[in-house]
Image (tube, rainbow, N blue to C red; front, side, top):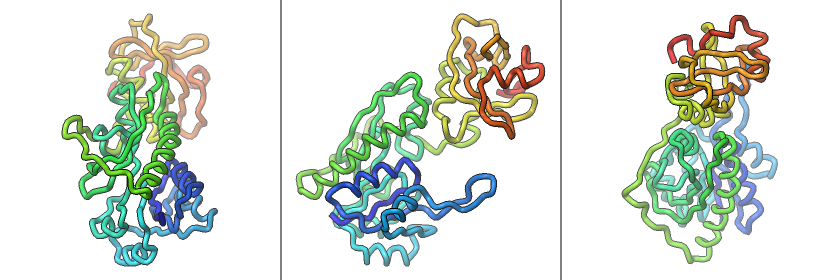
Length: 312
């Protein structure tokens, strides 16, 4: 089939690479415009745009897919099907109607669970033991279209969102190619999603990533892993924001108040609503990430101090 691939972040590149290696033709790529990044706020093309440029593929970057010029160019490209992986914008009905085989979305959850922008993060926040990836036909309602297929993936106890998404990107890319192969052969029909089991996964913002030390230790652990690497879990210490890496639990230590710190020879403990956890990496403002023990040696009065400044 002749394809237009839509995607933006690095997690979508695995699918683009798999399609380029398949029997299908990737005629063009749709991605979000270059965005400011880093301290210099230099505009950088998306990961998908960079890969497409390297392959000599036309890259379309409308500010909105509702732009008439984009719809005109889409019709000129005349794709049979448009696979989508984390494009990052809603597609209007006029755009959805162009390809004869529709738009096939790869979503990183087992639909109808976790419809929305952050399914992997919400699966970790909820303590799910299994997740997966699903291909489905795009419809105007959010992630509600009929399903072509799915693959499952066990969630490991130490998984961060980045770890889990890396595995889902690889398995999902294989699923996407298989879905398109079967659509091309004419032997695949999508099935409606169940009405039961629908849940939503809105975008994770900075406030969601703030650690609440009065939560149970397991919830603190889940929140930090769900927000690693982005948007990055954080707390405060003496009024300054600290970025935190994953923690480990210390159930034998139960006499620390939520947020209270205790420094040991090679580790730093912090109290939660149940029992203490051991801090992993800590990143202070303007500093590189470092082991919590090294951070404590360089900070003042850590022993007996508190994270969250009494607010989390």
